[in-house]
Length: 181
Image (cartoon, rainbow, N blue to C red):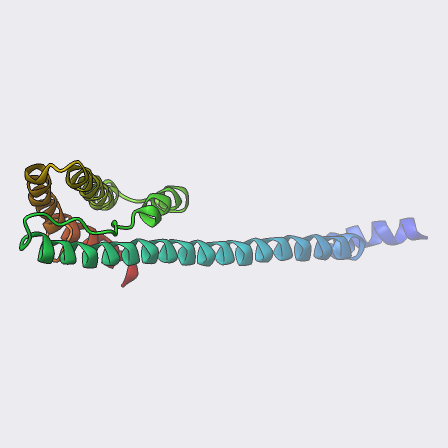
């Protein structure tokens, strides 16, 4: 009898109805599984994108903080270094965060050539100033006052590039501000 019902259904144009009755539950299960997987993927990708955005913003925030601390120290150096024959502070400019942050930017972000160049120039000049301060300290320790005074003059020029209006500060600040605004 089932065979007759099958043929009767086909003859009356109910192939679709028969197909739905036979396989409908399986199709719905497959469809909902597919929709669930797609929805889960979308939610996960949105979460990952938001987490990446937060990491990048935190990285640029760290770079900004270090640049500002180095700027303030450089301003102190310019203020005292130009008035004294030789000036050798006990502090050095910070340079740890930028080095680590650049690695994080390369991993998580896609910094442009201009962005990397601006941050690296600032970082390298801060390191160069730190080395100059060390050399001035060595010259003073060895009693070479003229060398220490000369080194202080060079260090003051370096420090002026790291303060407001200085070429390296302004380019780094412009890049940082585009990511923090």
